Length: 427
Ligand code: ATP
Ligand code: MG
Image (cartoon, rainbow, N blue to C red; front, side, top):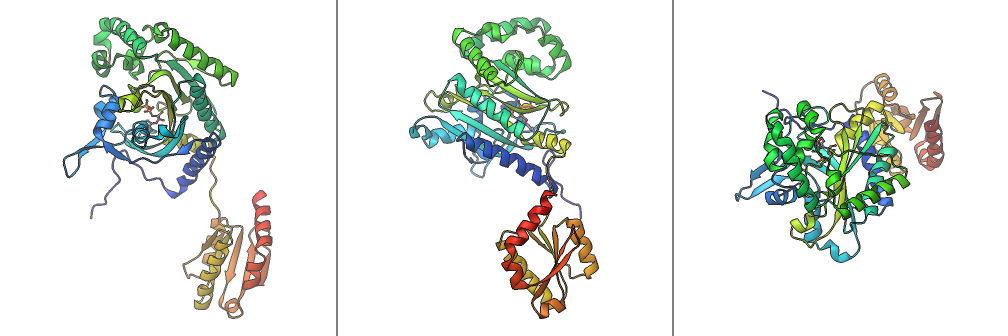
């Protein structure tokens, strides 16, 4: 029979890759917890209108990348293409603002976009995202950017660049939009088809085009920085100053416009030189318009999201994550011995050891080979002879030293065993 394969653009994350994922998740959650960010878990699907309103119909994400379908009662449902709209919906729905002060939130999970799959770009992919809702202080922009930089540094990632821009407020942008349309219109036929379309729908996004010819034309386009009003300019300058105070290197990139409509003021991206064309590992910015747009009261906010797959690719290139090795590999043979091994393995696990039990029932020689391959610190050996008198042999893999204990003694000396294992771990 034909085999069924995973859907194009989705990937199984296999056991050998999991340590990388756990490393990213652990480091991110620790760093965010230290700054008092709390995790929030929202549904994977939402009403389609949430994204239409929250992201904007003129964006690529809403225009052509969403997984939208009708449920059994003909309601339009969309698999979330990003996390912010859902978090903000939850913020409004549960009146999180009534708790007072700002809300510091983070999330992790799968996102869905119908895109052309390639290295670092999938149809189901994963993000870790951070949202700081309820303040427009430039310090809050910098708090989130600094946390993002911290997370990447704690992961040991190098050759990263921080690009920064301001997209101003609505008014600044409407003036700028006009200037852009005036600039690009004479080149219309030289632009890529998507950008031609954007000229009327969302001209800012032309700056974000990946097409070589369009990029070349965009190089001389007017810069948004010259269209910022007094307040926007002040906000942007303060953000830059605070980043400099924190010694966070950054470069102004006037072509940096986030794809989503609700962004205001600061926009940023962190790129890696080691990722080829899918080089952005983290992107975000200020979205003062979103809470209002989704029916809440005017509430400023700032957020960003990391692309997990791209972080994992970088970590794999650096060979950072460690394989998990068991403390004990348990070898046993014979009915009585195998039954005892099952019980003893469980007791050792309850004492906090990791124990891999060989279930094969094959000859000792074969089991020993697997013990070697497991890279366990010690091998526990239980044959019929030991089973009869409730003994157990411990073979230390590094020194090849073998000791015999009664099974109860082994459990009693667990502290000593733990110490011995920790010493081998340090070697
Ligand atoms: P790109 O320009 O790479 O398409 P984007 O601007 O669409 O990115 P955002 O919506 O800001 O991306 O999402 C934040 C991060 O999520 C991106 O910087 C990237 O690391 C990751 N990401 C976005 N889309 C995908 C995808 N299809 N597959 C894997 N990662 C993705
Ligand atoms: Mg995209």
